[in-house]
Every structure is written in C-alpha cells, then in structure tokens.
Image (cartoon, rainbow, N blue to C red; front, side, top):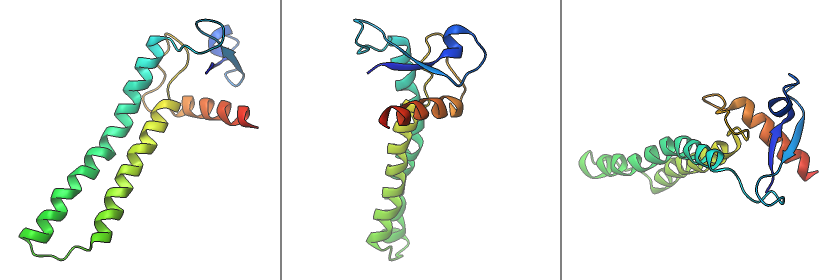
Length: 128
C-alpha cells in the first residue's frame, strides 16, 4: 500500500493539511521503509500492551475473589471485563498503526493524535 504523507512535511509549505502519496520501492508503493515499520511496530506494541496485561491480570483477581474470598463472581462478569480489555488491546493495535508518522526522519508526537487525524482522514478519503 502507498504511504500517505502530508505535503507540508515533504515540501515545507507550512500548510500541513494537504496529502500526497509517497511511493517507496518498486514504484507500486508496496514497501514501507524499515524506519517507519519499526516505529509503527513499537507504537502498536506500546498501545496494546497495557490493556492486554490488565485483561490477563483480571483472571487471577476473579479466581482470588471466588476461591479465597468465597465471593460468587458471575461468569458473565469475567467475560465482559476481560473482553473489554482485550478489545481495548485490539483498538490499541489499530491506533498504534494509524498514529505513526509516515514521514521518514520524523517520529511524531508521543500520543500521535495529529498523525492519527491525518492518517485516518487520508484512509477515509480514499474509501469514498
């Protein structure tokens, strides 16, 4: 897939709202530079790890409440709570990919809010 980068980053016009396709590799846009792929992987792991670990930590907590404290924890509550956190982990993977700056040499912000807006806008524009 072609990587979409803001024109302002490539041409320095200061606008920041315009996009252009940047194709890497063989001209078909199939290759993403390793720098961007590594940055994307790091962001995906970072945004997905906390909800995933939290979801796994609820299993021993529910076991402790049920076996040690003798509190009857409904099974549906276990499913809902862990499903919520595992779903959050899935969203973290998606957000990590979309919040990555597609411009080589530019890491972007810590949370990547601006990059997410730009990248999701570019994707939604292409689907129309």
